[in-house]
Length: 327
Ligand SMILES: [Cu+2]
Image (cartoon, rainbow, N blue to C red; front, side):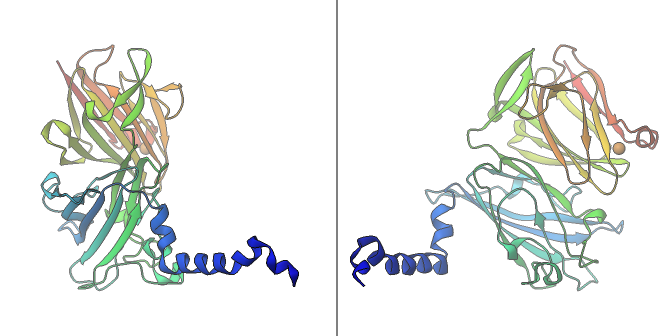
């Protein structure tokens, strides 16, 4: 028993007790969670007259670490949109996203499953049949709140979508219940190839962002206009995108549904993220995502720059639009 005189061994029961206390109280999660803004967001899932489903923004408040609170709800479109509201966080932020069930005539649960960021098992937006713990979904009159952490390293453009409604295994993302989460890097800078140089672009210098979802044979678009205080404009299907020559524009291209696509934009070229490879076409499969920055009309000037899916069958079905660059 003389071993017990070793200090490290004497401290062992204390260490075990401390570890247990820390894990049991969640203090461990608190200790390692980042210290950015807290986003308190309420979304509602509703049905459209067309029979499609969509998310709509109800409220978005941001609480900064110093306790100041700002309400940014007015940045969003009024009413439901496809894709749903584009949620913008920064590496280090947390979000509490409350989903309300507003789908008339149905008592089936509806949810939000998000990609990319960190969340607990019960916040993954699936039903008990999949996660074995809880129905991570909203029921009529019974909202559900998800906590997401944009932990360091999770910067990127990510999808969110329903994982419950109508089909307990799959959900109804295909009917319009999908949207975009942008996690901006902590330093606020992204790579881009501009005038033949690989440069770091400060996101403060990006004037507009276009979110394009490729769903079967249709583009569904959303604009974030930083010249209008980050206001979001739903662009609906196969939209014309507008920019002034020389403006820095960030594109976010994502896939939904069952088809595989090749996104192509005329007259422009950009970097494969994290590389120096210059491309002007990118493969987009279901729920894959790709983001890049271009300078509108760089090296080519103003024009009606066509964008489209390069899968011939999809092109023939009208999967196209214009990027209109004006002087
Ligand atoms: Cu396609």
